[in-house]
Length: 425
Ligand code: NAI
Image 1 (tube, rainbow, N blue to C red):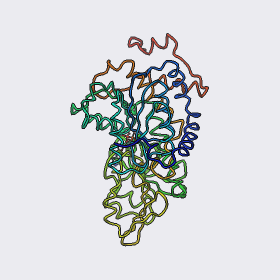
Image 2: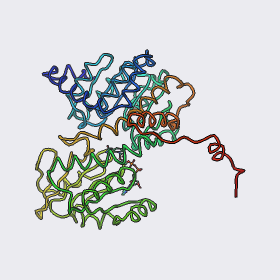
Image 3: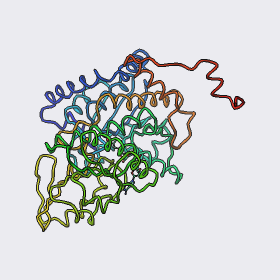
């Protein structure tokens, strides 16, 4: 078991102050959570619930955790990636009434999983995951808790894939909402969030320009589309690699060059993986790359770039800049890996994750999904569930109202027409 972060830091007081400042800034730009929080504070709908969270612990996530605690829940939280925690934010969160934070940046594998166990020791009634680590640990090691778990919510594509695989094998024993798959999350967070924050993080970490570079984007899913579009917007030439024919065609019709990674390896200056798959960039590709290329992963796990193979090929490796590890090959070429091949937009030393506004939407969906579990959890059987569309719409409406954007409503006649099969020519 791990101690809460406050017990682990030498100067928790000053860390807390800085973390609080970051959270206050984020919350000023999170009108959806603010609106939900106002109602939650009045009604305290989560009183008696214990919410276990494993997410990237930085300012926006902290605002979500605080919002859930304001609704009356006891919240225990840890990271979902050893490099994405902001210790100051974790400390500030740990000081919030009703919240215990175990997240700490830079932990090894053992401490990482100990912190997950510390969250589970709170015996959560609801789990909120980014990558399914809590669900996996509970099913593997603490199945006795499942009876009292109302349900869970999953934030990311990789977590939803893993949950679906578990569900298909008949192994998922409580209901989990696929928050990732909602329009309010995926069309904004995966596309704009990953695009903007990955490029910003790479630029700040390297101090290099996008203009005139060839950027190879592996995977043209939601995240890949965002990365490709934003890179093109920064005057880079974009090359896309794909394994799915329709997505490859989509990228081609959008005007990007599409080619196998074996060819792209020779073209690229910067490589960004967004596949959620493993071994996307491997030895045969390293062998063809130019001196000085940048290698970054914007998918969930650190398995997209084969760093073991790169380590074996290298005759020397050293930290070229904070967050950049150079691998020097025997012919003198240097291949530069950012953030140890982990999520580049969250795990470089300067990374801030997605823009605040985007996370307000994703976490707005998380908050209404937790409310749905508390209010109607019994209605959902074990397995992966789509988030009810009206909840997603509710979050969109709060955001539009906050932005001062008005929009049209169907008239009764239009609604009837849209629902009818009898109206023809
Ligand atoms: P997606 O399923 O829409 O797209 C993934 C694409 O990669 C698919 O089109 C697939 O055909 C392609 N692909 C798979 N294997 C490939 C290979 N070997 N070579 C080339 N293409 C390949 O998924 P989405 O939503 O774009 O998410 C992708 C990953 O990013 C997931 O791991 C997800 O969890 C993660 N993610 C990361 C975020 C971040 O902050 N960096 C935010 C949201 C998601």
